[in-house]
Image (cartoon, rainbow, N blue to C red; front, side, top):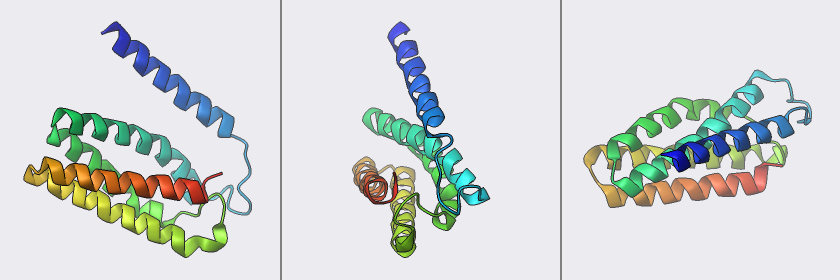
Length: 140
């Protein structure tokens, strides 16, 4: 229990430190847009959802997976409307990755609802790859 609390505290400190370090960076013309503010608010929550889904899949807890995918799916419309931090001229590719992410998360939710643990794991792996590829290309 003590190590779990220490791990949780360390994770919160890390997220907070990253947010503080990122604050004040400039994002070109779209720095102050409401959509960028939404994106900045969503990404730490996406990281948390990713960790919780991974843990739920390890434990075979498909209800936990569904809970997190419900959140992710409630935000993908905003994700697809957002602009990336860099390579803004490739906005259509960014939106394509976001749309693919939404499809992967939808497949993850559907597999979890059906009780298909292996299907859920495969969809999660695909969604994670999309996250990673998007961050590699569009995140500073």
